[in-house]
Image (cartoon, rainbow, N blue to C red; front, side):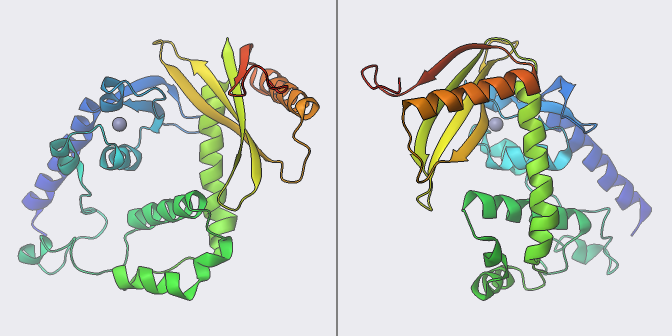
Length: 266
Ligand SMILES: [Zn+2]
């Protein structure tokens, strides 16, 4: 590739990197156990979103938020729509074909593989896919239809490496958000998931410096088959408060729930 063209693409890339901060606020706190600062979306803030997503200030995560955030204007979205990984795979066939790069089927680049893994792990978790469905023939056919050269992951890789790292990421974000906070409000409710398991979920509501409330998912417990009575609820609420106080050093102001006042659990 001609060096001037390469320079040009680096300059463009660097400019986009700088411009991306027009869309985000960079916070001084870091994402726990990483070197990346926390970031929040300016468009979400402008739309008065109650619980601003804490985003890792790394290009992929920022770009990913811009693509999926419904508060980001279309012209901003298209500016940051997936750019081909120019550095990762130089086109050896010359200048004319390089514009077709994003449309031709080819093996995923290293960065794209990471993106694919994250998307796949999130999909499995969000859609409540069983872990073995990752090796399901129909699912593999679907992926291969969309991307013939895709290399599917084994169930082992998904559980041992990818899901584990996604969980670590999320836990570290939650921990970061609820550690050493004062006047936390705890709220809880029972609900059923798509597998009809009865769950008891807790959400910690934290007041941030700028006055916005941030809702942080704290814990979910499978209570299928358990007697969900007032003694049980009081004991569980107590246990969560103990954990939050001892493990995260946060203090509580109130506990709320949506049961009506006449109900014994309230
Ligand atoms: Zn946003």
